[in-house]
Length: 332
Image (tube, rainbow, N blue to C red; front, side):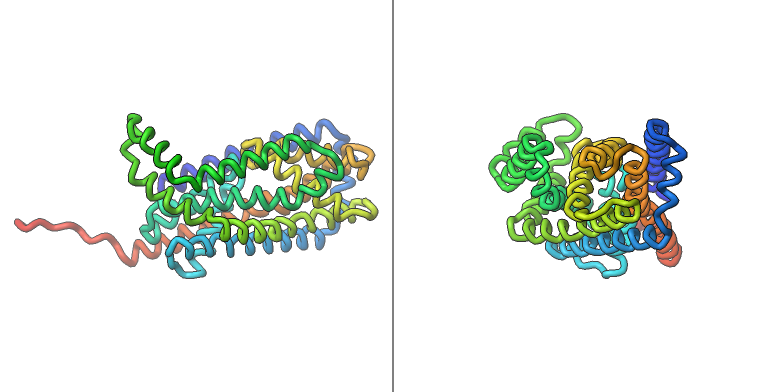
């Protein structure tokens, strides 16, 4: 296992420990017995089905990842591309999921593709994920008058960032300043390559298509949330509220830039469920929150771990079958 792999697993362990601590603290704030009773009300088949809907989410987001590779002129096999994408889910609990840049590291190792060339894909993925969640949350934010100003300002900030990234003159001036800095200035050529990829990925047509795909992908997990809420006794109308609570709390978690949004996502989700009077106390709200987070975030981490181990196994076999040839000199 490479140093990068070891570091990834170390960060994963830290994230798991943080998750255990956060969930334990929330459980202490509720009635533990009531919490367990509500968790037991949801059939196993519903949990499996929710994981299935999350799998559809991953599948749609994989299409976005693979399309981005093609957009940059990178041609790799569909199977290997899928394996790298799923392995990246291991870093879903990194701050803002930026740890998913490990996908670029894995492609560098297995296909010798420059990290600077593919790392912007992760940036484009995160931006279009945010925009897709805004699509899902927008109507609910207006109807329920929850954080309208904050969300509007955030959305404006995202569009300003996109406009800046599409301004070559501004970025060129910024890179010229960076080039004069010690240590990072020597990476100017890599930064130029990264910006070239960024420009290609964030053109308005691929940006719009990727945002729509992201909205459809995240709606799968919102449907799973509505399904779980139904089995916890929430009566209709439900789907609208479920989409609003899920997308809004997921957005807040992402914008908090905490590992996996831990604490912020769970707290806002449970709080919104009570605020909307879908539940009259914290215990069933926490039960719904724990179940949807298990079938989305933690299920994804499990898929990422298994895929990462499979990648390591296949890469090790490849390296064993094709060992590096020793270099020779003219004297030898």
